[in-house]
Length: 253
Figure 1 (cartoon, rainbow, N blue to C red):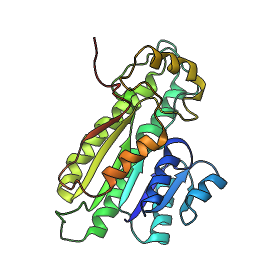
Figure 2: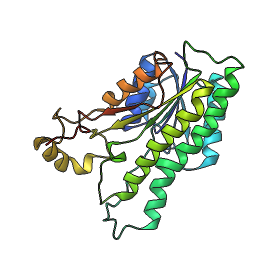
Figure 3: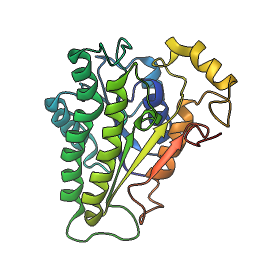
Figure 4: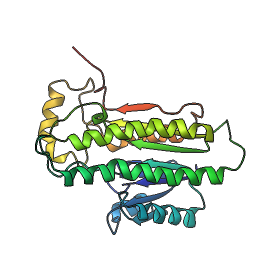
């Protein structure tokens, strides 16, 4: 299939994405903050590349890309998946600058400049002819239903994901003429370690009808959409948003 770079690909949604891409025949390079990815990741991607680094640090971007090119020679797919929630859910009347900067740095600033670096690599390796039967490269941003749904006790998270939504549109517009397609995936309530601490809250939300499909999403649900978007079968589509939340985005009376 090609070579994929995935941020935050060692656990949660990212591990689900890595698992699906490997299954589909992709060579996968992952960057995550842990020094060691663990046995679970190695069993999923025995031939994969793991780079320890933070998407918030621009030096890590170059290390990640250089390592990918050294191992695999090119990059065809970038999945900006890494993201964090605030460590404390504070009301926006009292939320602090330090946590705001941390969330924004990882969720918005980091993917923006990593995309810039990788997109330039995709353009350089494409050559002078822009293909029309397949993308010259694919970039997928994993945002959140929180791009449009308000949570006043984690405003920095909502703002970061709304920014990712705009970044997707910006990159789609800029890279369309280069033959590179850009998409956004908006997960709803997905069962990961990020949501484990609020399981009771979301169980009650499902019971009260927050989504037409009354179940938790799984990382594999998001990964399945990544697989479709990365397949190259949509070369004349870009800037599209795909919701993975059991219909949470549907306004109901």
